Image (cartoon, rainbow, N blue to C red; front, side):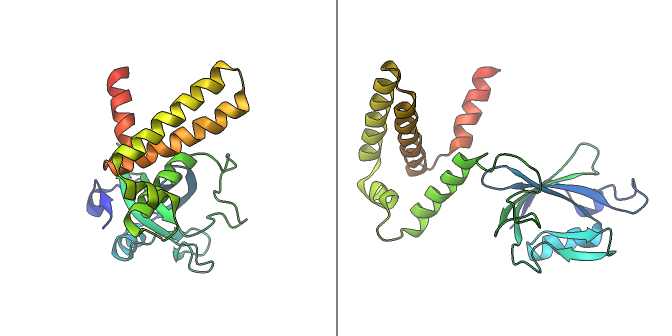
Length: 204
């Protein structure tokens, strides 16, 4: 099911003479911007029906589903329309590199951008799928108390390295801290978004 905040009939396809509206695609897990494409009403209806991002090719003058050649489909999870109802923001799960060059994104940004959210998604899948031999699964099996204990241990180790002025060791320990905190959040049915909402509330 694609989450969206609009109806196709309410979009302003008539603003441009070619009847197209731009679509910005983000990675659903990391929020990294992946590409820009265009849709007409038919392409959008096809996307909503199949769950795979379908565009209108301005050069070939036809519909094309991203990944139909490479297999790197974009499975759409969320869609949002802008205030003028003539641009879409799509959040999708990519099956592989999005750019025709083989890059993760069509934009030349740091590929590590948003990895914490990607890690959060991996942790969520570990909780749901329970693969054998996974350290994350072992943590979930031990319960919230044990996970919380690990968070405390990693926090102390991070503080020690910070006080000692050892930046590389502090980064290592802080990475352990973030990972175990993500596991603790997942164990409680929470996520980074819940932390962001609280931080935004405090900022305001």
